[in-house]
Length: 248
Image (cartoon, rainbow, N blue to C red; front, side):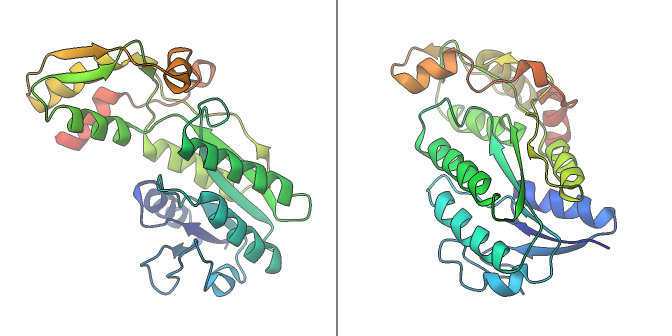
């Protein structure tokens, strides 16, 4: 039986990864700031040594848009190397190397740190995915609080189901370190208005969808499709199917 530590194991993705691994008969340690017995704040790394001791792999799902992913990666890598953990698997985002967002820069920096550390151990795997259906849902729900639903003009997304990503992570976690594996995208590249209308139909709301032109390098990157991976549209669950399950 393989012992696997999942950071962020109580979050949207991490909890699903834990579920998938347990279903496959693996021993799972859940690490989060509030989960006992492995309540660890990765920003300072205290308690990590005990958490990683004796595990066969680490699935690193913990992340925050507030920043600090680089510090968390540094602490985790140090503890994993000290405990001779053979495999660290990191979940990242399509476009982290092309979109100049602060959060993306931190994710990309963490990727580079993990890759560089892999020369000394632990072995590593990085999977990049497109945005989750959950994120698109929250985006639309927030925008729909207004009398009109404003969206960046010309932007497309390729949302993927978090459960399908969890399946892929569970598969990778029990395999050998594979380096940067192929990206994982949702089944459809969709203009934002299409996704907005799907959300409005599913929730029974009526709002005019208003395209808004923006400026800057980040917006230009989105217009160019830096967030998409159409050649890796391997997800199966559409946004409409996600909505039906969530709201049904």
